[in-house]
Length: 293
Length: 267
Image (cartoon, rainbow over all chains, first blue to last red; front, side, top):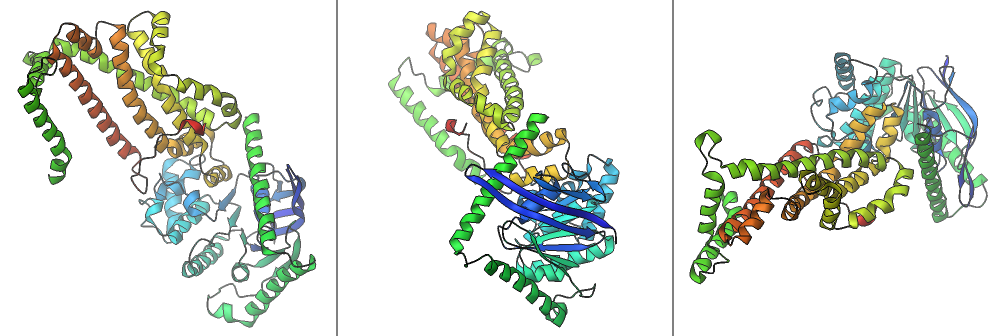
C-alpha cells in the first residue's frame, strides 16, 4: 500500500505570553491510500493542532508532512475537511446543492459542478434535498451535506474533525455506516480525529492512540475487523471488545504514567489555555498571511 | 384585512381627532388636515394628464430632492460597504483607523453644513456631500462589524477548500455581513432624509426643504404642513421598500430577525 499521507517528526510549540506551550511532539505516522485511520487522544491533547498542521492552516515548528509524496506548504490542493460543527461550516445563505458546489467553482464549469454535486448528494442519500437550505435539515442531514461537499471535491485525503460528536447516538451510527460505505465505494483515504474510543475502533483500519499534551503516538493499532461492519454484531464481537479495551487502557495508562492523577479542573484549565494559544496562533497566522498578500 | 385595519386604525383615529380639534380651535398656524390635503393636491397632483397629473413642482423640487437623497444614499452605500469590508477583514487597518472612525461618526452631520457650504459653494454638490458624509458612518461601521465577525469555522472551511479571493469576499464575507449591512442601510436611509431637508433649508431655493421654508415665510401654513406630510410619506415609502428588499436578500436567514445597528463602542 502506497502512503498517501506521511507525517514525520511533526512537532509544534505555541508561543504564548506566559511561555511556550508544546502541543505536539515528534509525531510520526503514515496513512496508506484508501485507508481509514482514526486518531484518538484525551481531550486537549493537541489533536486539533495536528489536524490544522496537516491542513496547512498552521505551519509546524518541527518536522514535515507530505501528501502523495509532495511536501505540504500551505493548504494542499486536494484536501477536504469535515468539521464537527456542521451548522457553522455550511453556508446558511446557500442551498444544499450550492453549498456542495461552492468549493468546486474554482476548478469546474457550471454543468460539471452541478453533476458532481448531485452525484455526491446521492451518495449520502440527500438527492432530494438539494434545493433546501441547510438549516431546514436535521443535524445529521446537515453533516451529510458537509460530507457530500467534501466528497464532491474528490480529495486525495479526507480529514474529519470529530465529525459525529454533535449528533445524537442513533444518527451517529447511521453516519458511521455511511462513512464506511462511501470509503469502500470510492476508495477514499480518510483521517478521522475523535475522542470516542468505540467509534475509532468501529471506523478504523488503524487506530493511532495519542498521549495527553504534548501529543505523541503511544500506539499504532491495526484493526482486524471485517471490511463490512455492523453496528450490533461488530460491536459485540470479541475482536472489537478486545481492541476497544486495549485502546482504553492505552489512554488510561498514559494518564497515570504522567504522575499523580491531575484534578479535572486543572485539566480543563490546561485545555482552555491551549485553546487560547491556538486561537492566538491562528489569528497571527491570518495576520501574516494578509500582510504577505 | 383585519391586520391592515389594526395597523391603521390608530393613525386614522388621530387624524380624525386632529381634524376636529383644528376645525374647532381655528388656529391659523394649525390648519385642519383637510386643508393640508387640499394644499397638497394643488401643489403636486393638479398637473396636466400628459405629465401624469403631477405638477411642475413635483418635477422640479420633489424629484430633485429625491435624486439627492437616493444618490447620496447610493454613493454612501457603495463607499461604506467596500471600505467597511476591507477594514473589517484587516485587524491592523482597523486598529489604526478605529479611533478616527469613531470620532468622525460622533460629529453631528448638520454641523458640517457650513463647512461644505464654504468648500463647495451652495448647490447640489454641497448637499450631496453633506448627505454622503453624514450617512456614511452607520453603513461603514455596521459593515466593519459584520465583516469582522465572519464565523471562524467558515474562515477555515474557505481556506481548506482554497476558495479564491473574489469568491471569498463576495460569497462568504459579504453574505455573512449582510444582516448588519442592512441594519446600517436602514439607519442611513432615514438619516439621509434628515440631511436632505437640512441641506435644503440652508442651501438652495429648490427642493422640498426650500419650498417648506418658503411657505413658512409667506405665511402659507397649509403648504408648509403639506411639505412636512410629504417628507413623512417619502420616509415611510422608502423604508418600506428597503424592508421588502431586505426580506428578499436575507430570505436565507432561519428566522426573520433584524439585527440591531452596531453600537459606537464596538469599534
